[in-house]
Image 1: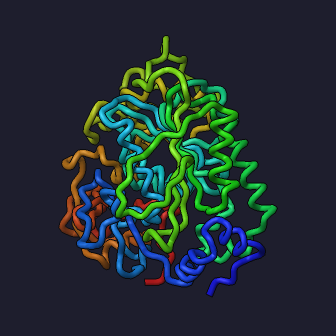
Image 2: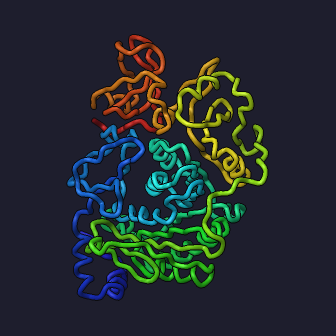
Image 3: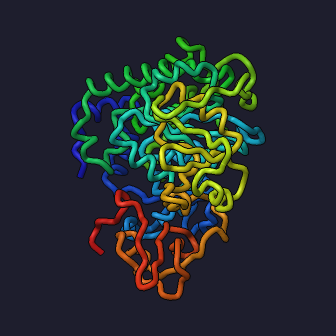
Length: 458
């Protein structure tokens, strides 16, 4: 049972009223709902379960399974995500039908909203997923790699670094670090960490984050601001500050009454006694000025970096390097193949200029699809290639395996695949790729990344 901290009860009674507080407090003593969101680019068939009303691919589960032991999770077939936060999908109506937009998820780890945005970006668009805390970038990279969209760039920067990119992004998402009141029934640590001083500190930090990144948003661009907390300081008061100090205007998101979402002039609130989900707040704002338009190309192509300059990509000028000639046959679509050291990456052609431009301002972790590592005259294919939605179905032989074998692969154990031809082979579970092995006859060397290995006892 949750023991509410400090003055939290009094503050919530002032927000909700004493009668509604009782319903709210009772809801927090119940088990939280379990929800997932399916990957629309991997043909993952949603199971027969209750739908999350505001998200086309969102589903509620009746029980919480051992997700770690489900190979479909590792294949990027779905993401375990809290249902309330899936509401950002409703903002996509404002960019539907446009092309070539630039998106920024400023506080992206572990990747739930980035994977969702990746599904919502229109054709020819780019998503930059940024995380300032280095220890959180590994989870972000893994989750986005498994999701498989090739239009994603992952960076590791402080929000103020984006000020060097004025008027660059069409849509910006700031899921701001907050006091976490909406997570009380899921994360006991959030209860222990709560204090009025912490709420004040979070509100100030949120304003600083928005202010630092504001110039990077185009005029008439859209800002999605969200928190997983209830108090006015971090929500309505911050939105009021954005309208008064930054000149932003709040944009209405159409709702259905049956969703039972609480609204006011500043945004949308999710309370667990009203909606099936955790505590959440979101607001959509527009930066006043020029009309939202397709991303314009740079006036002149930026000069690519050479080795030693920020460790950036090296352009493959001729495509004749070792193994590079084989890589284009592995992907569907128009890609430019670049080298960074011994590694080959594939960038969608429409991203190349922007990627090289961004490298002059940001610290990159990855961009596009990591195709593989050059060794000798060939390329050892990377796990990201197998998981990419751009992979050609006939690029490699495949071995469809049962659950036990799939889990052995995910534990990075050697597999015996005597009926598969020698060489690189994709391991699939329910027709979805999990990664590569190199079949040498009597056994197959497992190429699953060591950092992704399942360590849970089976």
